[in-house]
Image 1 (tube, rainbow, N blue to C red):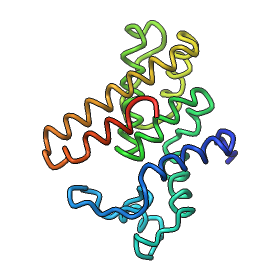
Image 2 (cartoon, helix red, strand yellow):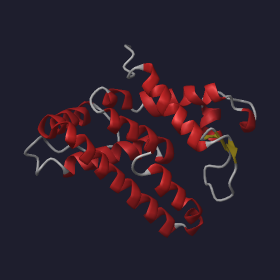
Image 3 (cartoon, rainbow, N blue to C red):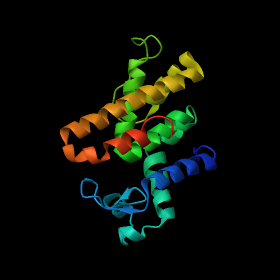
Image 4 (tube, one colour):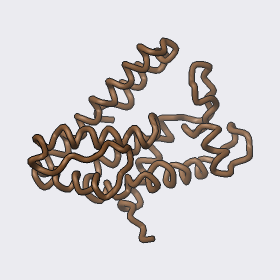
Amino acid sequence: MPNTDPPRADIDALIDAVIDREGRYVNHPADRGGATCWGITEAVARAQGYAGTMRDLPRDEAAAIYRCLYWRRPGFDRVALRAPAIAAELFDTGVNMGTAVAAGFLQRALNALNRAARDYPDIAVDRAVGPRTLAALDGFLRTRGTAGETVLLRAMEALQGERYIALAERRPSQEAFLYGWLANRIGPG
């Protein structure tokens, strides 16, 4: 399989930014993910073969997990070849909310922005980046150009922000995280 990552420094920079933002070991009582290190939950680390204590998860192992599970596996590397800012948003949202949620935001936004399927056909919101999602993205970018990438990004961030607020409304314990999510996960950063 060919390497479809953008230039290495770009994906490394995205991973480094997430790791820096997530920080070292955390085990906040309101975090349903439990203990994390570098933003990697214990369940994810174990599923990837890490057997040590979470406090000792090596940074390079966390980076390898991000590259595999949150970049290549969901196909965000293929999005990066077309729209780097959208891929960066998918990656960051995928880390925080799950890659399927991030892909669903992209699909919903593409459907809403296709002018009643005049620019390209609607796609299923199956929460996976596949050939139809990539074709819709290509159609959107062909129609709207590089300025369209900014609008698509704003639409995805609007969906993300709404989800954060709904989560805090449903589970008041999550209000502990809402300010940080809105400050650090939405918009320029």
